[in-house]
Image (tube, protein in one colour):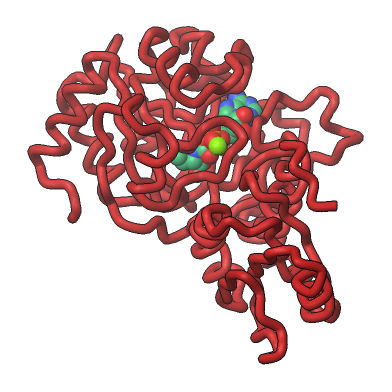
Amino acid sequence: MLPEQADIDRAVALLQAGELVAFPTETVYGLGADAANPHAVARIFAAKGRPADHPLIVHLAGAGCLERWARDIPPLAWELAEAFWPGPLTLILRRAAAVPTATTGGQDTIGVRVPAHPVALALLRAYAEAGGGVGGMCGVAAPSANRFGRISPTEARHVREELGEAVPLVLDGGRCLVGIESTIVDLSRGETQPPRLLRPGRVTPEQIAAVIGILPQTATPATSDDAPRVSGSLAAHYAPTTPLRLVAPAQLADVVDALQQAGRRCAVVCRSPLPQAVSPHALRKLPDDPRGYARALYRALRELDHSAADLIVVEDVPVTPSWAAVTDRLRRSAAGAQATGLRDG
Ligand code: TXA
Ligand code: MG
C-alpha cells in the first residue's frame, strides 16, 4: 500500500531528528538521512556496513537547491538537470563549503540527483517545507538500501530483509520501475575536461550527448587512477551470495544440462526459452529488452539467491550500447559472487 500523508510526516520527523528512513526511488530503494547532519550520515554507514570513504548521493526536491550543495556549477550541469531531472541521473560536481566531509567520503566533490519517484519527491518536498534538516540544506543522502556489496533492493520487503531493525521506517512505493541504479556523470573536472561516465544506467551516454553535444567518456581502468572512489566501480559489487556465472546464449542449454547431470543445482536467468529437456533447479525468464530486463534483474537474482541453488547461471546479454548498464551489473555480480569465496568449481 502506498504511503499516506501521515507516513510522509513521520518520515520527515525522523529525518529532521537525524534518524534513517528508507524510501523508494525510480531506480532502487534508498537509505536516507539528513545529508547535512554528520551524525545522521554516520548512521547510514553503520547500517550498511559501508566503508567511510565511499561518498553518498544527495537527493534534492529540485535543481533549485543545487547551489547549496555544489559550487562552480558548469553550464553543462544545468542543461543535464533541465533535461533529465527528476530522473535517474546523478551529477558529480565540486562540493559547496557547507557540505559535511562525512557525506562526500572526504572528497571535494558531491553527487546529487533529483529522483522521479512520486513518493521520493513527496518526501523531499515535505522535508524542505519542514525546514530541510541541519542548516536548511534540504538534502537527503541516500545510498541504495542494501548491505555493502550486496544487491540493491527494488521492493520495500527487500530493504527489510537487508537492514531489518536498523531502519525505523521503510516507505513502501511498490516495485522500482528502472530497477538498476542511476547513471553517474562526473562534471567536476573543470570545463576543459569532457564529462566522464562513472556508472552506466538508464540514461545512456547517447542521450546525454543529444543534450550537451559531447559524449561522456567511459572511465576505463587506465583513467581511473585519479577517479574518485565509487563503490559501484569496485569489481565485486551488486553480488548475490550464490556463485554466479555468465554463459553465452549458444552454450546455455548444454552448460546447464551438464552441471545438472553432475549433481549441481543450477538456477538459471535467461531471455530465450530453455529446451524442454533441460530442467534447472530454478528458472527466471526475463524480458528480452534492456529496460524490462533491468527492471526485473535484481529481484530475480535475490529470489534465486534464496533458492538453495549451488550456482546461478545467467545467459549473457548482447554487446550493444542499450545493454551496457545491464552488462555492467552482471559482470560485477559475477565478480562479487566469486569474491565471497563460494566458488562454483
Ligand atoms: O540510483 C541511485 O543512484 C540510488 C538511489 C537510491 O538514488 N543510489 C545509489 O547510491 O545507488 P549508492 O551509494 O549505492 O551508489 C552511489 C555511487 C557510489 O558508487 C558512490 O561511490 C558514487 O555514487 N558517488 C557518490 N558521490 C560521489 C562522488 N563525489 N564522486 C564519485 N562517486 C560518487
Ligand atoms: Mg549501492
